[in-house]
Image (cartoon, rainbow, N blue to C red):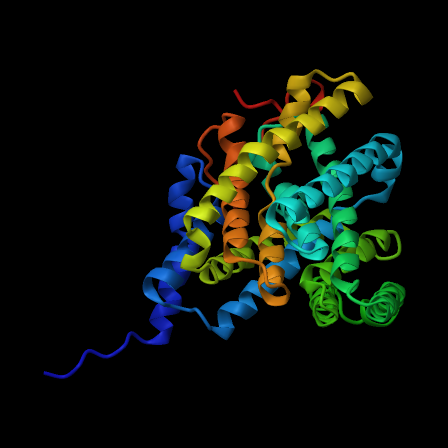
Length: 402
């Protein structure tokens, strides 16, 4: 009897597409974000079936996902909004930096880590994933005012976190930090020149090429920063910020239509990033120590993060604690940023797998909490949570979820 032949690669990919784009939607009715389902599918494929574990195609699609997501986050940066609410945001940043220092010190002492990986773990625990949060706002049942504050606080937090990430990763030597900083400054200075040349020499003769230019520029910048050792997200984010600041010269490059196009592109490819992250999870990360560490992170840091936002807004804006807590809950997800840092810790630092497992459990927990804590209705359409945007209520605010 002939031995059974292996399933063709084409069939594997077809089944994967079905799993990533159909199964998560089926589970959204139980308030399970598609991102969490995609990670779980990756874990099942890697640990359970041994599929796609070293697949370059999956890695390429995952890279497009993370690049487009942070490009989208950069495009959402509006410095006019940040300047308008500067006093509150500066207070928010100062509180965040203080919390980051305290958590890093606690991690360094409790887990006996050197200061650089301890700082990275603190970033993974405290940094909201702006792109992910912004793209799931439509499902959270928040008002227009809450949406504004969630966006501006998340953006401000991520700007600081990216700066801290860069310094932390490049601070092994002063020479390395200086060279990397010079390359990054050069990138920041050259990008506006590239946008001007594109606007003057290409757009008049190649209409509707803005999306391709923006995406390919983000990919190129992402690979440059990846070579610097600060991962893809920094370059993609810088391109998004540059495009946003170039909006008056080339309106189409950061228009609402372009934002929507990038968001749709990200929603198409980011499931592959989460799936790929799940593929790299090992059994060593789900030991008793890893599970206990993840539970401890959730028990301590979730209430702390919500309380910091609520209490600050109570004193700075006179806002009720309950309303401030809703904003704090909405900013809990750290999924993308934490998964990125888990990958960096695995590649560059000899951190125990239990720490990685604790971070994975923590970030999956923080991603699940908003949907249940805000008592949302079962989602239907949104790429991650599935819910349509809430209807406008009196005064233009979106009606809160029941």
